[in-house]
Image (cartoon, rainbow, N blue to C red):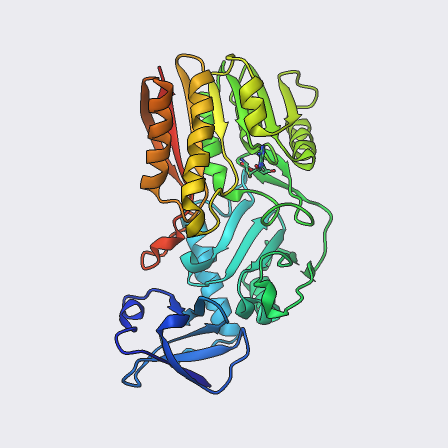
Length: 393
Ligand code: SAH
């Protein structure tokens, strides 16, 4: 077993169960671990403290276990996956007749750093974000098939764009188990085509489920603009909620196709919906003032900390346009999914935008990611999605 020795004092965060070791904390390594191999971590006093997947980069080790006697084998994956499955069942997200779309594994939030698994009906889409999870994918898939027996028959691996590209891993997307072309899943009784072959993330933004359900409650009789609609999730909920009209906008023509498909799946030939393949800023500039329910769910403006200032400016500019145009008495759902943007940062950007527009604005709800995207209490970085629901006088 490879041994990683920390510099003196660098064990403090691990003692508080934080699951990462930064490369700068390492004094020396016994042996030459390959990227993705399991290493043991020792303090400067040579005491065992944790073990995890090794990787070259700023995060050098992602902790899998704080116990020396816990082997990282198939039984290990089965234990962790069982805990994740049982948690989703016990909180009423999995095992419902009206919902078979949920996140089964959320990385650090499920003590499996680097691994994401989303369930869409009888297919699980598995995604590795670390070299270690990629190397262990076959064992993990076997464990997953056993833990989800009777519920999941197909496991699709989708990691071509999520792995560190310098690591020469050459992941190929494809089924590790089964194979299915049936890609219609159900979320709270609504049907969605899930494009796990070509779509963003694992094919769907599972993380907006509860926020979409909240939007449905506000949709009745309103004119809705769903900006950055992607697969049209918010639009479909707005339609069911009784919106007067729903306009969906995304700059990607593929996203607009997906939105139209999903609307047709649930509300065929319903004249209330129109989709536009257009840039958000251009649309917001040219649109009128007919909307009284607007959703702004842009892509992560800041992928890294150094991009923070530009990102905050982006959120501010976007939100100003919505505040300026939204009808009096309108409701704005505004989001940020950038992990690098804190709740306070985001709120300040939206606050500044409101002040620039001069509108009277109240916060109705403060939103976050749903319970199937849990935050490990020792890893606050896992909190990434934030949203505000605002009443604009
Ligand atoms: N609200 C969606 C997820 C949004 S993802 C859901 O609930 O599923 C962000 C989307 O923004 C992507 O589909 C991307 O194509 C789109 N996008 C990125 N830049 C854009 C721009 N400048 N104008 C319009 N859409 C944009």
